[in-house]
Picture 1 (cartoon, helix red, strand yellow):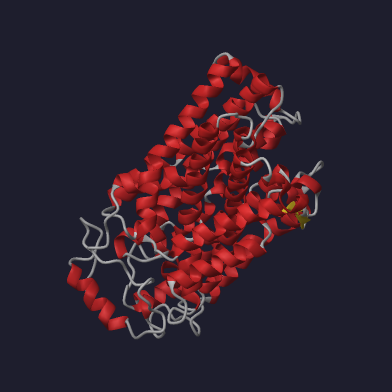
Picture 2: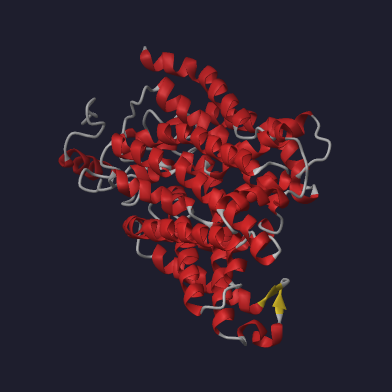
Length: 507
């Protein structure tokens, strides 16, 4: 069996991968989409990885993120530092988990087999997939409302379509925009993962240019960037002390990409080298997130001066323009932003995760279609109903799950296995990753115990309007660190429980 070289962190030749595929292709754990990428398939450069992060970061939920922190009581530069720090922190597990994808060519659910067992891997994979489905629905809803706004600007009768009828409290014309955007994404899902690389690469300059143009316009109309930033204090709706908001805001910033910090191997398995994936992520993630969040704050503050009211949603701002050409350009940028984020962040991973349930029955495309369907059933219009609930219930809430899984995976791969995996046995029902009938009970126990301390706080936040607790108790305070606490517990507990197992392997 071929092994990885110390210098290149990839298997030796194309032939090694072809022989491996031939050897394990009959396994019920194998299909073409989950198979390790070969040398020829690793075509993603540093720019491709950076463009991936630009495409995923430039999105309306990033645009509104800092504004939510300011609403809670931060000033603009405190919000920027919090977002930059959060994304720098999450970059660390991102790069660590990405390593196995580039070294072995494996996707996230296949990597999970080493720690959780060949069957147990479905537990973290499906937990990750459900969160992705929720995000798919949110981004699709926002993209659909952008199309709805465009049609309304181009045809005066659009907003009175069907006599202004509503379904589930939402106008029928908005539903049409939503499902149109949904069907466009389903069409792209059918094209496979390689099309996503080209989509991200070509969209990145448009997204950066669109954001810069919006900032320049807002600064010009409002009388300068300095005046705009001084006006940002008017966005504050609450006057909490910074240190009371900071923990939850930092956790939300980490939680924003906690999902991708797990399934990043789904992309880095296509990277040319470890240098490409590390440099691409370091250049593409923290700076883009912070810069686009800054644009969101600056433009929202500028709307106070220009229109006399804050307009935090760029879709609503787009409707204030009289020029159809301007609206068309704005729609193109918003459309590209939502599309690039959804296709990469919220389709690739759950497609692989659902495929891992039954590789012989569920392909990448079938998994993507399942994602698109569940994304609608999770009612994204409810998830986005309140920014407080969105930040303190949705983002912080699922970060606890993601943190626990990240702690287990990083401990397993970096500390216990020292970056050494048996690629052949990752696709075998009977092998070193079989554990107990395919489940590593130690990993599953660790996952439950690591998440448990933040569950009471999540339940309290989920049943409190806006997600903010006025007088937080011990578990509410613990919940504000919902990624950090499960990550640390997962890492330490898994290490302690697995020591005996690794000593047996060494003997």
